[in-house]
Length: 290
Image 1: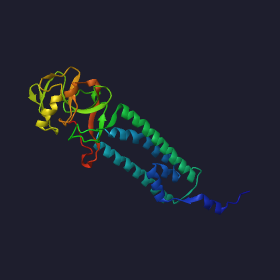
Image 2: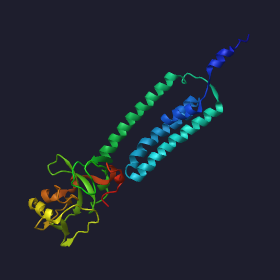
Image 3: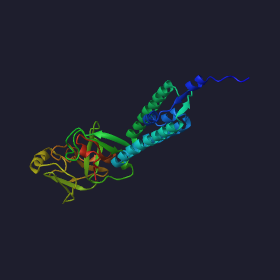
């Protein structure tokens, strides 16, 4: 005996698919619009790809500001692609029989779950990256003017010197001589080089050091500032093996190797790559230490 089908019940189970809503859902959380369209496996595929690629991709892109900008646009492009696919699918199917997972509370739970995973994933990866690969430092002083301004955020590669030697001109972050604070200065002399400084000018092995980077100093003020220096001012100083001599670019207002002596290379934490953020927006992305 065949049971009668209630047409009103069928009508209630079929819901119209709105392309704009499918687009919006997938733009907020990639794959959610596909769930809305009754394509849970496709939605799960888009969401998994997002989890697997987004966080490490952005983290690696921090190595270069142009790569970072490109990565951000690629992530936005991925959002747009997944969202457009969901909207086009919604416009084709028009109506769809509701499943258990297509309830408003299911969507809310889905959003909460995805955001929880993203927050935990971002935190875990960011801790891994900042502890072992990259770190953003803030310079609180004027010691590196005019190249780095106070409160500039700079990206530092913590792995750079694990496979390379120190080079003159590199701006580095290192543990201070008392072992309590981190400092940011420029390498101007390498092991076994003879360095002398007079009125802010650096002489290496008797020859003036070519410094293509911008400096801030007044020869007359520098002469007064150098009265308080202990190393390489007045007398020639030989940089010990395994050490480098570091100076601030603002020669008249910097505590550096003139006061501490050369710094052990093992205290260097990493090389400064570029300005990640600055109050002067025109300086964002500026490469440093080249």
